[in-house]
Image (cartoon, rainbow, N blue to C red; front, side, top):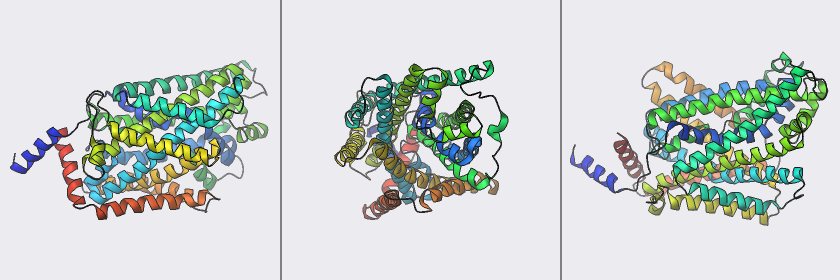
Length: 481
């Protein structure tokens, strides 16, 4: 080992370190949890039904295929690079320091706003639960949001293993409740005791007259966004026991689970409402399709429990989101791209506590600002979700460009999958900005563009930027060997 390498090893030994202690199930729990399958199935099916009618499940089947191509680049890069900054290292090691930082900056932009989005999911379904049970009607959303914020902060500060286990429990319980509803629907269909004569039908995979490929492509974009967060396990590159094996498997597991669960759930919802005109109309106009089906097929108690399940799913997504954001800020701080204090790790819990505190503060400021502005809970949810999604799609494009570049050095054939991933992520990004959406959604692309330009400015003003990134990535690579 030469003197410079020895110096880097000595420096890395004195650097704060995350604890490498996560097994595969705990690693996969983060990707599945951030996807929030129960929350996704509570809100995304209506958009697909509006475009495709009885063939709404096809939107999620096609979306799963598209996400598979996008995820391929992540899987291949995560199999070679393990880093708390995930795409910061994936792209930085392949396209260079500035591109790597920009990818990480885009990801950070997403996960600064996604936890408040998840908190608003807790609020929306918490209020639905209180209304359904008659406990409180039209509860103020801010106290509920604060309660969810506190729970997420407390759970995230306990340490990565307790945090991921909590997240896993949330998703198991919430998915289990949906499976109960699905079983009840099929039971009543088989027994011939459905509310309006609904029956099993293969028409859920047959397009209605007049519905073509363009409608399918548009509907699939909503299905695609239900998978957002599948890449989150990449942030555990310095906390998984064998990251280059566990993280690719975790990403594959999350996408595969989402594909099966989403398609099965939307098939069940479509059959539950009915494949005829009346059933399709009821699905299209349902504010909470799972709750409506629960009331029709089982009763109000299950509808209330499903609201609780959606709350747990949203809570898990928020918890996973703060994990990702805190690790990214930790990586930036450790490499001197932000305050060095963000690179600190608690000796007691192994958590980057200052980075976590900053992430939680940003969430609190956003929630409070919207409350002071008098914004409704539903609008807060969709405003921040749109901003975060746009930034996430930019990161998806950059990461797949990096994968295509990296794999293309080995053989031209390996470029195909990530190149398709670039096109798919690019199409979804394009669809979300054109045609120009109505106000205030028309200004959100400019906010994201401003965030990305700020990231580029940072790369220009930090002295020795490329050297700092290069040395930081190399130090982590050496300690991972």
